[in-house]
Length: 636
Image (cartoon, rainbow, N blue to C red; front, side, top):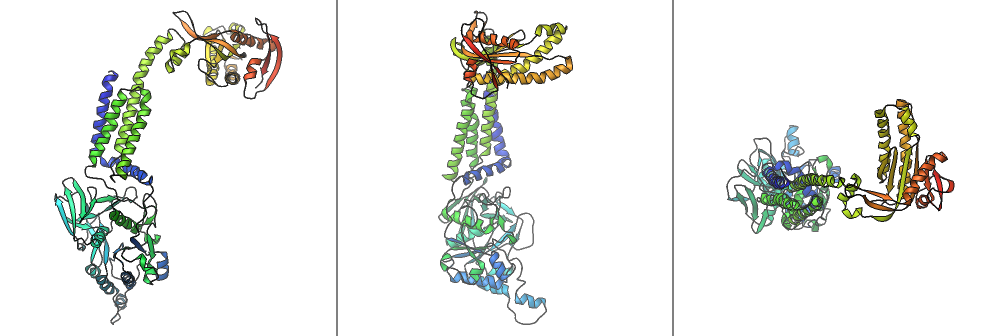
């Protein structure tokens, strides 16, 4: 099957598979989606926390002054009274009083079987609740039922549209305040937090379903009462909730009535007052007057710390403060009920659109297309989050983009390599393999004949004729020669040299052609030294196996040479000719006469940049040359 047939099928297959998994297996992507969203949210500086919210903190100071929690409820009563007298707008408890006060004088007398008219702290607190703008908190049990009666609230919850409540978070039971307190409070709301991914709190549910009846959160009830609204209107459909209305206040939510919180940074972003200071009236009334007051705890021992994207441990009460802040400012995030539409469009872009672009471009453009497409996806997600406050599943389009560009790159390179091999086979009938590869990388202009400075290296095995006579078996001899040639050639190519030809047991190589090579003289010399090192290693093996040792001589010369494609019309090769080549060959032959392994000329020495152990050997006129040249032995 050809490329034209495979790639369109691949586009369609990726689109169908990713759309199906995105729609039907949302949970697969959820953890990654949440992490990506957190990354985007953290990339922008948080907004300043609202000055209209104050937290009364049952902190370490309060516990140290008043003793262990729970405090006697007469102290709770006194603190609420002090807040009310200072003009608190509305007070909410991130605490549930699920058992009678064991420290109440009435309870202690009863326990000790003492008769008398003793103060009942629970009734005292109940009386205070009747006179103050206090909303009690309670807790829904989402996993098991119990016998407690449904909690009290005053909100009139109206469901518009579908009456199907399946999309709401469902509770099984409730942990509520004791009857005297529940009946005396103006209203109440739950303080559950749902949608906690990997231990990170990121959302707040505004309504929960218990026995097919909806109950408001503590935050929603506080906002409703503060805004003098009697009703909570829920816009519902068969697919789930679209949003909530409080009078003129529109709260778009996800299908479970959850909003994605826009945290104001790390913990303690809001104004905190110590419970002990409130109890002793040691606070500025301006921090309370007309404000939302939340009573909770920051003490680690009371185990009400949660993790957010900005902080591994903030007081749970601050999550409720953030929710109020977000609702009042309308800057929370949400996943709309039609979020699948956004996801489907982005998957369409990542597969069909990107695929078509890649289809008409060479494989070498795959990375550019990928980066450009990734930039478009990131910009789109950033725009939706920070302009529209919409959060969608981003990982599925992102994975689709990886699949599309990845598969296209692999297939395109596969088909292009087939084409390149065809071209290579044609080129190799005219030029050497090394030149053919250079033409494929660049263009045929690289083969043009030109004068160029190069460094030429010749190496030759000493007394190879005698070695041939000693080893009678020609197969064994060729095997030894091949074992020698492999590391020598690797030592040349390791330093970007080009092996020009093999002349029996000799090797000719050059550096700085066909492509430019910085410090080509150093590269040639380092290659020669590497050959000698590897020969020592090889000789250990040959001595053990055949009781022989190979000795070589290497000659190096630098200068100008004519380089380019040379030969007949039927067979040509990229090679070089000139005096520089001839001198290098003659210098190599001199190694035998001077009894050394490695010789270089003055021309090569003058080009060296690095330091070597070099010894001047002689000044002579090389055979065939009129000018004298100095030769040097390179020790190391």
